[in-house]
Structure formats: C-alpha cells, structure tokens
Length: 159
Image (cartoon, rainbow, N blue to C red):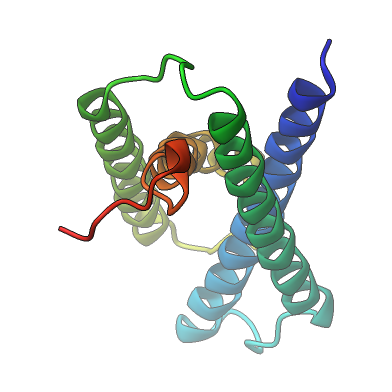
C-alpha cells in the first residue's frame, strides 16, 4: 500500500473519530438539556462532554484540512487522475445532508414521545450520523481540492 493511501486512510479514520466525539457530545448535551427542561435533572453535563466536543471538533477540522491538502497535492502531481463527476459528488453531498436531517428529525420525534428522557447516548444513532456526515465531508474535500488555486498548475478564475 502506498504511503499516500495510508495517510488518507488515517485522515478518514481521524475524521470519523472526531465526528463520533462531536456527535456524542452534542447528543449528550441535548439529552441533559431536555431532561432539565422536563424537570428530570439538574441540567449540568459533565465537564468531559465539553472537552470531548472541543477535541472532536479539533480532530475533525485538522483531518479535513490535511486531507484537502494531501488530495490537492496529489492532483497537482498527477493531473491526469480521473475524478468523479461534479454532479455525482453534489448528489452524494445532498444525500448525506438529507440523511442527517432525516435522522435528527426522527430521533427528536422519538425523544418527545418518551415519558422519561434517557441520559445514555444511543451509539447506533451516533454511528448513522457519522456515516451520513462522511457522505458530506468526502465530496466536500474532493470538490475543494478540485477547485483550489494551483490545481493543474493554473489558478482558477472566480465565477
């Protein structure tokens, strides 16, 4: 396996871990707040939740930045590389975004039907959100590198 593929795989895993930490923290914070609103808790999440949110966001942003830089560099070195069509990447991005919104709406509706709010996070929901978010992030990185300045040795005009 080439070092390029190994690094890109490492960055994908890093982004998925960052997304997992981020979605876990968001879900935990929203459950604590909902329980507090319904009079079932004190509304104070553990400090580790905010720390996990910060670390997850940092890991996600660094992974996306380095993946964008690595892919753009690869495209500059090998300008004849075949790429997915723009329409496909945009369709994938819209599908992933729609799946994330649908999952959030369905999950919120389910939580409103419960008499008592669970304070434990459902990892299946987190996993689905991570996969859907990766369906958004991967096309964004591919499109961003394609239209970045310096692609194929030319600066792309705006517009």
